[in-house]
Length: 109
Image (cartoon, rainbow, N blue to C red; front, side, top):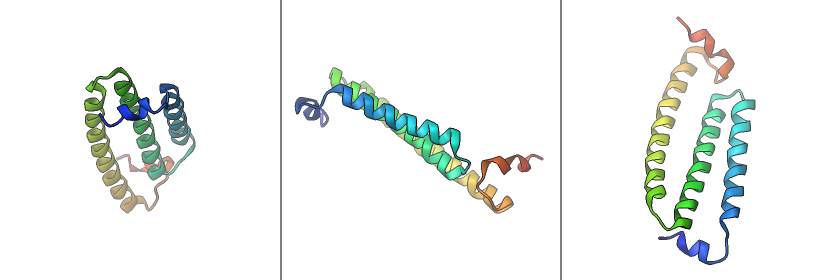
């Protein structure tokens, strides 16, 4: 495994826990504060990648590949989410000429 050499070089699991926590917190604050739909999608992706980083770190730390396989499926779902989210955003922008999520309630029929 590629990441096994990282743990052997002296980087502890605590570093990965702190890094993933900071990345997840930045993404969560971005989702709560920002109003732009593109920034919201990027913050959601940042939170998913923080979880992926932590899963790979724990999987490597315990010497099992189960977490890395699960991360692959999370990445596939995240790519599909980004594709669908951006396509919905493009269609909404064509109708209302804005990416502000507060104005999306105008799309109700």
